[in-house]
Length: 100
Length: 463
Image (cartoon, rainbow over all chains, first blue to last red; front, top):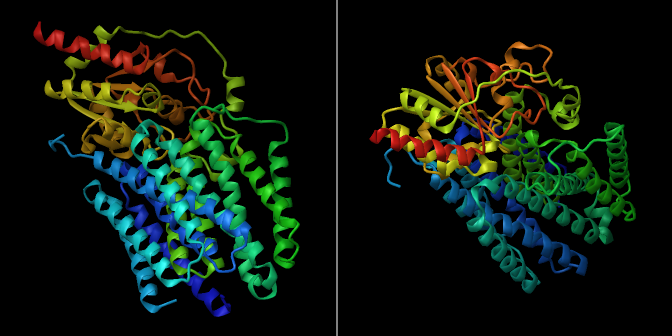
């Protein structure tokens, strides 16, 4: 469990990741803002890790299992549809003269 | 946790960052999606390997159902429905974070003194608050985008006061939970208030503000995943959540700037409501034209800039516009598209629709770049856009849209506007563009009118 030292580390990581995110995303072409949003949405479905841990815990209560089950279903939907739709969208962007 | 899994997690975080970096251009975007997929796969496999996972039947069933729902959504959804699907996926992500937070809260009760103290409970409370309010808020946004709910703002008296009081109570309960985490009866009340607040926050926001709202909800969904990372002490979740949070933040800032409005104004302003009542209806003359006349003018032009808006998405006119684009390009007309950042219902909405119709992306030009070209442009053809072309934003200090950056359509030699009727746009503001001497109004459905123009064009070529 996190003690004070790990909180410190967590906040540090949060700060650095936010700055990296801001810098990287500022450079994303406005052409791709819609696929960007569905991609980041799929990435934030990494919360599937938390959902697996709570559902699969040895001490999981029935409540935990039910809530965890719904949570996993919801994020797996996001992961699958998020990546597939993003790919479907970015595939559509073609330069002039590219074959149809 | 075995060491190699920690390395897998680090690798996954790196891949997520690369994935976003490769979104900077359409050429590398597919690689970006692939990197994201690999990162996700590593994270999930790593989790199964590293932890002593029980209850496999529950987990496998959830994976199967999620996949079975996700695949048809991905392949069958029309591109015009992308904003709704995005709102729905924000709702799903936020719901998952909220439910995991709820489950953690109850499961840790027996060992509350050890596992629910200080910072962990703060993180759990933030996770559930953001999760639940983003869940219902995104569902409301989806309802508005799908037109199940009215797109107009739903307002009532003292709305902001009611919202503020509700939010204050929710915050009060949150503080109480942090101080006394074993007060389990507070939690359902707190969750219910968060859910309710999400609904009330979004219903007063109108359709035209959806690009900003979706971006803000995107940010919240990311931040709740991030808070989950703090509660579970998972650095990977912190990184991925922070990336999503900052992406939503940047997009919402871009959207706000493009409308010359602040966050608070978007969230609490109930745009459009006030203006509709005060818009005075005076009779002014407009010139209208037939598809044949429009075809003549387009044929004689050497450069044309098409300005698409939400009306294009509603009419599903993107494929007809491609035909027009192809036809004019074959005649040697230089055709470009001027895209306003808030055109449509989500950031980048128009680009996706036009790309779907196989219009090359180098023809899709951002507002700041295209604005210099209007004075040299023969014809500006506005299709389903309104407020983003209104010259009042530059000239009329009293107008609610004053100061909003617009596409300088009025500087083109000739302006043609395809529009169903003279009814004012979303903001309820009369558009001076329509009354200019050089403006021709083309009354009709965007898809129908464009296809009639296209029909006129080849006939003239033969003649």
